[in-house]
Amino acid sequence: MKTLKKIAIPVTLGVLSLIIYNSCSAGIPKGATAVNNFNAKKYLGRWYELARFDYRFEKNMDNVTAEYTENPDGSIRVTNKGYDYVKKEWKESVGEARFIKDKTEARLKVSFFKPIWAGYNVIDIDEDYQYALVAGSSVKYLWILSRTTSIPESIRLRFIEKAKKIGYNTDELIWVKHNQ
Image (cartoon, rainbow, N blue to C red):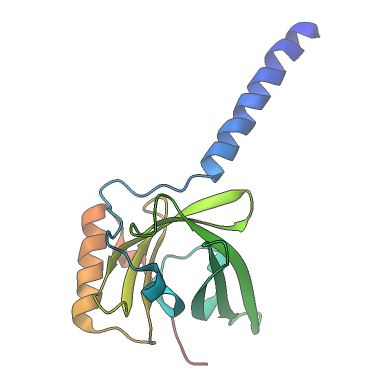
Protein backbone atom coordinates (compact mmCIF):
# COMPACT_ATOMS: atom_id res chain seq x y z
CA MET A 1 0.00 0.00 0.00
CA LYS A 2 2.84 2.44 0.85
CA THR A 3 4.50 1.68 -2.50
CA LEU A 4 1.24 2.44 -4.33
CA LYS A 5 0.97 5.79 -2.52
CA LYS A 6 4.59 6.61 -3.37
CA ILE A 7 3.78 6.15 -7.04
CA ALA A 8 0.14 7.28 -7.23
CA ILE A 9 0.50 10.61 -5.45
CA PRO A 10 3.39 12.01 -7.57
CA VAL A 11 1.82 10.71 -10.79
CA THR A 12 -1.55 12.26 -9.89
CA LEU A 13 0.07 15.58 -8.99
CA GLY A 14 2.04 15.53 -12.24
CA VAL A 15 -1.07 14.85 -14.33
CA LEU A 16 -3.01 17.60 -12.53
CA SER A 17 -0.14 20.04 -13.06
CA LEU A 18 -0.07 19.20 -16.77
CA ILE A 19 -3.84 19.70 -17.07
CA ILE A 20 -3.67 23.06 -15.30
CA TYR A 21 -0.68 24.16 -17.38
CA ASN A 22 -2.41 23.26 -20.65
CA SER A 23 -5.68 24.89 -19.59
CA CYS A 24 -3.83 28.12 -18.85
CA SER A 25 -2.16 28.16 -22.24
CA ALA A 26 -2.33 31.50 -23.94
CA GLY A 27 -0.32 30.54 -26.98
CA ILE A 28 -0.52 31.37 -30.63
CA PRO A 29 -0.67 28.85 -33.50
CA LYS A 30 2.59 27.98 -35.22
CA GLY A 31 3.03 30.21 -38.23
CA ALA A 32 0.73 32.94 -36.89
CA THR A 33 1.99 36.36 -35.85
CA ALA A 34 0.10 38.84 -33.73
CA VAL A 35 -0.36 42.35 -35.09
CA ASN A 36 2.38 44.75 -34.00
CA ASN A 37 1.87 48.50 -33.51
CA PHE A 38 -1.56 47.49 -32.23
CA ASN A 39 -3.79 50.29 -30.94
CA ALA A 40 -5.76 48.80 -28.05
CA LYS A 41 -7.94 51.91 -27.69
CA LYS A 42 -9.07 51.66 -31.33
CA TYR A 43 -9.92 47.97 -30.82
CA LEU A 44 -12.33 48.68 -27.95
CA GLY A 45 -16.06 48.71 -28.63
CA ARG A 46 -18.52 46.36 -30.29
CA TRP A 47 -17.58 43.69 -32.81
CA TYR A 48 -19.89 41.33 -34.68
CA GLU A 49 -18.77 37.74 -35.03
CA LEU A 50 -19.06 36.90 -38.72
CA ALA A 51 -17.40 33.47 -38.78
CA ARG A 52 -16.06 30.83 -36.37
CA PHE A 53 -15.61 27.11 -36.01
CA ASP A 54 -18.32 25.02 -34.31
CA TYR A 55 -17.26 25.46 -30.68
CA ARG A 56 -19.07 23.77 -27.85
CA PHE A 57 -19.44 27.06 -25.97
CA GLU A 58 -21.00 28.80 -28.99
CA LYS A 59 -23.13 25.88 -30.20
CA ASN A 60 -26.38 26.95 -31.90
CA MET A 61 -25.56 30.65 -31.52
CA ASP A 62 -26.20 33.41 -33.99
CA ASN A 63 -26.34 37.20 -33.62
CA VAL A 64 -23.06 36.94 -31.70
CA THR A 65 -21.31 40.11 -30.57
CA ALA A 66 -18.28 40.91 -28.46
CA GLU A 67 -17.97 44.14 -26.53
CA TYR A 68 -14.52 45.21 -25.31
CA THR A 69 -14.12 47.92 -22.66
CA GLU A 70 -11.06 48.95 -20.69
CA ASN A 71 -10.97 48.19 -16.96
CA PRO A 72 -9.32 50.66 -14.55
CA ASP A 73 -6.34 48.28 -14.14
CA GLY A 74 -5.64 48.25 -17.91
CA SER A 75 -7.15 44.82 -18.53
CA ILE A 76 -10.08 44.50 -20.92
CA ARG A 77 -13.61 43.49 -19.99
CA VAL A 78 -15.01 41.08 -22.59
CA THR A 79 -18.78 40.74 -22.88
CA ASN A 80 -19.88 38.11 -25.40
CA LYS A 81 -23.55 37.88 -26.27
CA GLY A 82 -25.45 35.65 -28.66
CA TYR A 83 -28.84 34.14 -29.39
CA ASP A 84 -29.29 30.38 -28.96
CA TYR A 85 -31.73 29.67 -31.78
CA VAL A 86 -32.50 26.16 -30.47
CA LYS A 87 -33.34 27.21 -26.89
CA LYS A 88 -34.70 30.54 -28.17
CA GLU A 89 -32.86 32.59 -25.57
CA TRP A 90 -30.10 35.16 -25.34
CA LYS A 91 -26.90 34.17 -23.57
CA GLU A 92 -24.15 36.36 -22.22
CA SER A 93 -20.69 35.62 -20.90
CA VAL A 94 -18.38 38.14 -19.23
CA GLY A 95 -14.64 37.65 -19.05
CA GLU A 96 -11.34 39.46 -18.87
CA ALA A 97 -8.45 39.82 -21.31
CA ARG A 98 -4.87 40.81 -20.53
CA PHE A 99 -1.97 41.59 -22.80
CA ILE A 100 0.79 38.96 -22.80
CA LYS A 101 3.59 41.51 -23.25
CA ASP A 102 2.58 45.08 -23.95
CA LYS A 103 -0.40 46.80 -25.53
CA THR A 104 1.34 47.34 -28.86
CA GLU A 105 1.37 43.60 -29.62
CA ALA A 106 -2.08 42.07 -30.18
CA ARG A 107 -1.34 38.94 -28.10
CA LEU A 108 -3.72 38.56 -25.21
CA LYS A 109 -4.96 35.89 -22.88
CA VAL A 110 -8.64 35.74 -22.08
CA SER A 111 -10.55 34.04 -19.28
CA PHE A 112 -14.23 33.44 -18.69
CA PHE A 113 -13.50 30.85 -15.98
CA LYS A 114 -10.47 31.79 -13.91
CA PRO A 115 -7.84 30.44 -13.54
CA ILE A 116 -8.29 29.02 -17.05
CA TRP A 117 -6.86 31.32 -19.72
CA ALA A 118 -6.80 30.92 -23.51
CA GLY A 119 -4.97 32.71 -26.28
CA TYR A 120 -6.63 35.62 -28.07
CA ASN A 121 -4.41 36.82 -30.90
CA VAL A 122 -5.37 39.45 -33.44
CA ILE A 123 -3.41 38.20 -36.45
CA ASP A 124 -4.80 40.57 -39.06
CA ILE A 125 -6.71 43.83 -38.91
CA ASP A 126 -7.47 46.55 -41.43
CA GLU A 127 -5.94 49.99 -40.90
CA ASP A 128 -9.27 51.49 -39.75
CA TYR A 129 -9.94 48.74 -37.17
CA GLN A 130 -13.18 47.70 -38.86
CA TYR A 131 -12.35 44.03 -39.56
CA ALA A 132 -10.23 41.59 -37.55
CA LEU A 133 -8.97 38.03 -37.85
CA VAL A 134 -8.50 36.47 -34.41
CA ALA A 135 -6.67 33.23 -33.65
CA GLY A 136 -6.94 31.25 -30.46
CA SER A 137 -4.18 29.17 -28.91
CA SER A 138 -4.30 26.58 -31.71
CA VAL A 139 -5.74 26.02 -35.19
CA LYS A 140 -8.95 24.83 -33.54
CA TYR A 141 -9.96 28.41 -32.74
CA LEU A 142 -10.53 31.21 -35.25
CA TRP A 143 -12.89 34.17 -35.52
CA ILE A 144 -13.62 36.74 -38.19
CA LEU A 145 -14.95 39.94 -36.64
CA SER A 146 -16.43 43.12 -38.08
CA ARG A 147 -17.77 46.42 -36.75
CA THR A 148 -20.87 45.78 -38.88
CA THR A 149 -22.77 42.62 -39.81
CA SER A 150 -21.00 42.31 -43.16
CA ILE A 151 -17.49 42.30 -44.58
CA PRO A 152 -16.12 43.34 -47.99
CA GLU A 153 -15.27 40.38 -50.18
CA SER A 154 -11.64 41.52 -50.51
CA ILE A 155 -11.13 41.49 -46.72
CA ARG A 156 -12.96 38.15 -46.36
CA LEU A 157 -10.70 36.57 -48.99
CA ARG A 158 -7.57 38.09 -47.39
CA PHE A 159 -8.50 36.65 -43.98
CA ILE A 160 -9.41 33.22 -45.40
CA GLU A 161 -6.13 33.02 -47.34
CA LYS A 162 -4.09 34.01 -44.30
CA ALA A 163 -5.86 31.44 -42.12
CA LYS A 164 -5.28 28.68 -44.71
CA LYS A 165 -1.55 29.47 -44.85
CA ILE A 166 -1.34 29.04 -41.06
CA GLY A 167 -3.09 25.67 -41.25
CA TYR A 168 -6.75 26.41 -40.53
CA ASN A 169 -9.37 24.33 -42.34
CA THR A 170 -11.46 27.30 -43.41
CA ASP A 171 -14.03 25.05 -45.14
CA GLU A 172 -15.32 24.29 -41.63
CA LEU A 173 -16.05 27.92 -40.75
CA ILE A 174 -19.60 28.69 -39.71
CA TRP A 175 -20.86 31.99 -41.08
CA VAL A 176 -22.91 33.59 -38.33
CA LYS A 177 -26.37 35.00 -39.05
CA HIS A 178 -27.22 38.49 -37.79
CA ASN A 179 -30.97 38.91 -38.04
CA GLN A 180 -32.03 40.21 -34.61
